[in-house]
Amino acid sequence: MSVAPLQFLLLVFAGWVNRRQLEIVEFLQEENRVLREQLGGRRLRFTDAQHRRLAAKGKALGRRVLDQLGGLVTPDTILRWYRELIANKYDGTARRGGGRSGTAASLQRLVVQFATQNPTWGYTRLRGALGNIGHELGRNTIKRILAEHGLAPAPKRGKTIPWKTFLKAHFGVIAATDFFTVEVLTFTGLIRYVVLFVIDLESRRVHIAGVVRQPHAAWIQQVARNLVAS
Image (cartoon, rainbow, N blue to C red):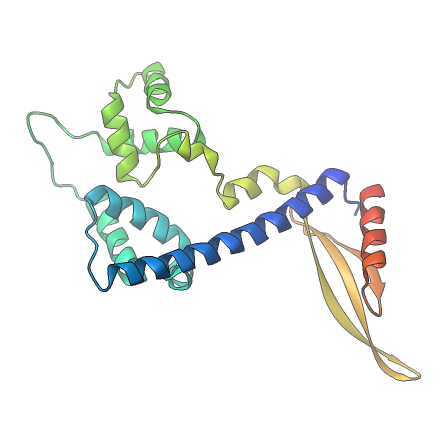
C-alpha cells in the first residue's frame, strides 16, 4: 500500500486535531471547576431550550465522557433530560395553543435533516429549500424546531465539523499510524524491535513503514519521506 502526500498530510492534521481536542477538554474541565467554586453549591436554573440543547449534546458524548468533563450538570441529569426529550418527541398527545397547530413530526425531521446536512444554511435558506418542495414554514418555526432538537443556528452550526462527519467525508484518503513492539529471539537472547505501521482506514490494509531497535528523530524523518514519496 502506498500513502499519497495528501493522505500523510491528513494523518498529521488528524493528530494535531486530536491534541487540540485534548487541550480544549482540559480547559473546559478547569473552567467547570472554577464555575463550581463560584456557584458555591447554588443550583443553576435552565430554560427548556437549554435543557434540550444540553441533552442532545450530552447524549452524543456518552456517560464516560460526561464524567470526565465534570460539567455543571451531572451525567445522570443530562441523560434524564435526553430521555424526557425523546419521550416528548414521540408523545402522540396533541399540543395546540392559540389556534396554531403543531408542525408535523415528519416535517420536523425534514427540517432537522436539511439543517444537519447543510450546516451553513440559515433560517431563510432553510425556509427557501423547504418551499421549493412544497412546505411553507416561517423562520421562527424553523428556529424553534432546531432549538428543540439541540441544533445551533448558522453560522455557528457551520463553523464546527463533527469528527464523525469529517471522517466520513475523508475516509478514503486517511491513514492512521502507530507503533508496536516485537520480541525477536537471537543468538544473544531476546531483542525488542519497534515496528511502525500505517493502516488505510477504508480498506484496512496495513503497510509496515519501518522496523528499528530504538526509534530516533532521523529515522522517523526518513520514514516520513519514504511514505510521502511512495
